[in-house]
Length: 336
Ligand SMILES: Nc1nc2c(ncn2[C@@H]2O[C@H](COP(=O)(O)OP(=O)(O)OP(=O)(O)O)[C@@H](O)[C@H]2O)c(=O)[nH]1
Ligand SMILES: [Mg+2]
Image (cartoon, rainbow, N blue to C red; front, side, top):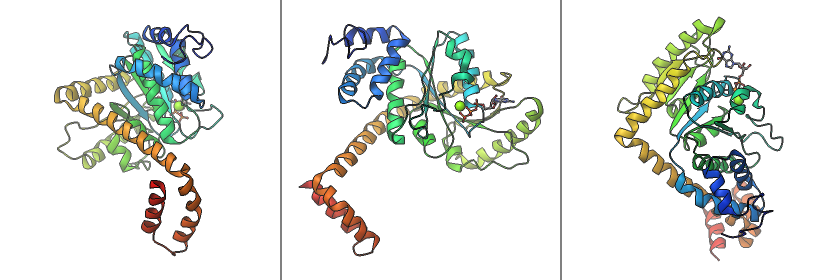
């Protein structure tokens, strides 16, 4: 291993190997430091992080990975707290990660305030890590996947990934999890609160949260209308019909059914091979996404390309040339 023995680089561990072994032993501090290293913008840190990750990846993959999405304020964090506490109570070890590309420097990410997961955050069998901050969605999602490897190598057998239900982050999260859960708010009438069709297509379960107190009845009605819509959207030949449930993260009502649904999905998908094939597809897609990101970066940084970008963009805008001719010119410059 490179940099072996550099105690400063290895964050107090005598060697990267010792660090790796600490992670394998479930040491949360060792995990947190590895994730920090992987998120670092410094090249030497990043390369040590990658070396560590290479060692950890054979130990990953055994967890159930669940994405939790939904509009701001729907109760994602509170649901993760309720579900997480239930699972640690059953003897699971639960890691909570997040993808929030909207949170830049502040660290004020969706998990920045752990107050909504206060009990879970204190539980010895839980590990909570806020979203990596800054950068593109692709970069943030990539860091979260790497953190997932660290958590799984650390023996965490359930990984919950929170993402806010706006924009492309749902697509990014659904492509790194086994099961994608979308939380919904109880809404009056059969108004489907503008949830996008694309999101319905990603969901393996839809859960109307806040089915308690004054909003219990409306939650049940909302559940009914979504159940009707799901049947229209998902093709009948799909082997898994997304379940539509209601629950209360506050009272805990219905939270057990959510987990039962995840397990029912797993049993079915493992039996059919869909579970394994989804994992393989995701791993391949992740690799290609990284290739594309690196190519883009190298392309834009190439001196001959760089010299022509501005003028070609102007020509395309002014209809002096076609986008395809301009693209060809840039690719030719890149090849030189
Ligand atoms: N009545 C009721 N309130 C809830 C429930 N779950 C969450 N809330 C409340 O809804 C508010 C938002 O909860 P959060 O868990 O922070 O929601 P979130 O979806 O994580 O929010 P963002 O991360 O900001 O997008 C809080 O005031 C919670 O107390 C529930 O099941 N019932
Ligand atoms: Mg939240």
